[in-house]
Length: 80
Image (cartoon, rainbow, N blue to C red; front, side, top):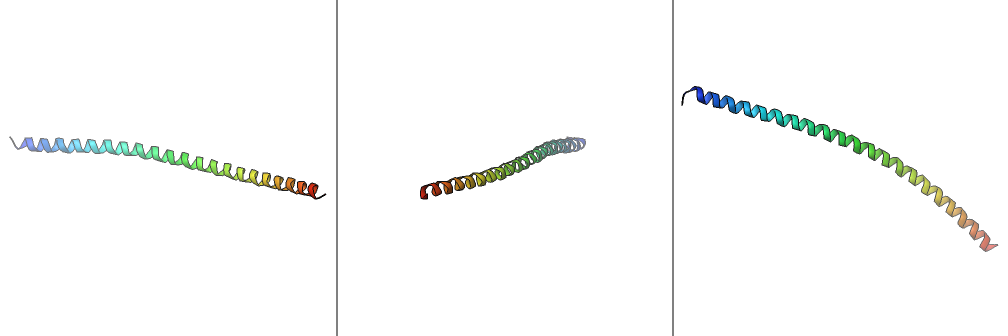
């Protein structure tokens, strides 16, 4: 084995490791972008659901008030 062969092997090994690292970095960037998009979608969904919850709570409060009013009227009819 000549002295040039170990250098070539080392250089080939280094080149392969650099290529693998570059591929890994590209994959990780892509995964990060996907995660950021998913997080943004989740935040938007949470905001939408919070608004929906607020609307439903307001509707529930109105219904409760109307029912209490009706029950009060029924009590007046029963007493009268």
